[in-house]
Image (cartoon, rainbow, N blue to C red; front, side, top):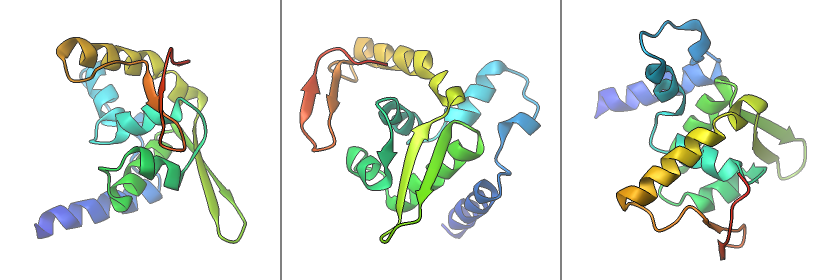
Length: 145
C-alpha cells in the first residue's frame, strides 16, 4: 500500500513538471504509444466527455462519479502534459478552471468512436448515442463527435 501511494505521488510530480510526456520515449509498438497516452482508468472517459465541449472540473467530476477528485486531477494533468487537454485557469474568486481538448486531443475522436462501438457490440454499453447534459439529464440522439 505504501509503494502504491509513493508511485501516485511520483506520477503527480512528474505530470506537474511535464515529465510524463510520451514524445521523449521510444516504443516498440504503436499500440504502446496509444495505451501510454490514453491508458488509465479514467483517461478515455475524460476524453469522451471533453469531446462535447469545454468542461469545468466540477462538471467532469459529476459526469465521472466513480473517479476520486485526486485521481481525476492526476489524469487530467497527465493528459495536459501529453498535449491532449488544455487547462484554462481564470483569475476569479472563487477560482475557475476549464478543460478542453486540444487539436491533438480531437484526433483521438475516431479511436473513442471505435471503443464506444466495440463496447456496444460487446454488450458493455446500451448505446453510443446517449449522453448526460450538465444538469445530469439523459440526452438521446446522435452525438456530434
